[in-house]
Length: 320
Image (cartoon, rainbow, N blue to C red; front, side):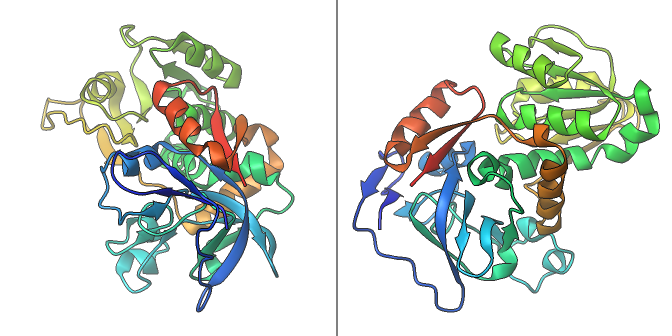
């Protein structure tokens, strides 16, 4: 079968037409329809994760199962025995295995999944447009879910700040608009992303050097030192800062170092149950779906190059 393989750290992607078919003993096999391209794929290329190489990348996967029909793959596969797995939080299981990051994923014509519980019915959603929901969408959805009680309590007086209006930030803005009455301020250095944030429902979109009023919720999709500092300065007393980005930032924390009783937490991917909730939201509200651009599987390297350079308006999706 055709597959795109990362042979080693910082090496170009290798398109192979004779890659071995995945084994399906003890699991499920799907024919891949589409696979989103995610910044986490670039982290694998850069060696930021201890990924076993060579590896077929890709964790935003939709496909067709011979019995279930059109499906989306839930990519974090937990050990099944720990407290987190018992609570349905396989994405933070210590011994989890993420498809496309630590085992072969969806940059291929076929993909193996260990159990059909990791296959979510698409229920009529466009499999190409929906593919980025599997990671980018689900990650933004979980981050927003941490804030819903506080923002709904505040009603129209609620205020949210989204730092980083790229692919995940754009989806977070849409999810906030669909699920709360809060006003949303987007912060991004790129004027085109600021404009896109306004189109998606943000009330205000500014650059990195503009002060904003204290917000009930700040979601940082970058996680760099500067953005974490900005988040700490932008959150109100008793507000929430949700950090999603992997840029390695750190800030001082302690009494008087941050606004009184402000809460700081990370947010990781999303649960299997939340994937079903997200797909149901997308079926009810088509505006929850991201803007996508498709490329053939053989142009995966071009997709990575464009993602690195920021030459992406929404999300890139590879199709076999």
